[in-house]
Image (tube, rainbow, N blue to C red):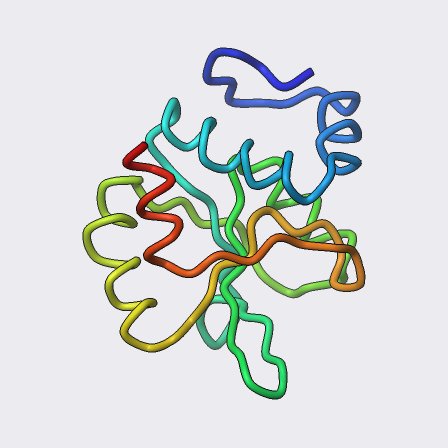
Length: 130
């Protein structure tokens, strides 16, 4: 299934399998792969990073690999590009800011209507530190 080592390019079969994982398995993939690759991937649009906005909540989707981010962008018709953030920068700068602003994280979403796991910044930091 997903590579045990860091891989610059994922095969179509691996991408297809990853997109079919449960929300919990996708969350675990974000944490475990980001710890290996030392980076996370976000979607950057024309006006900043792409966020999901609900009635009460703003959420930032994060991804474990560029190819999965690119697949999300094309599946959802988003005008944007994949951008990597080092794991160290994400933990030291992004997570405190997201927590302060009340922004939650969507762990490797597939489509907007699929079940997606959402975490607070503090919960994700704790998952990385475990």
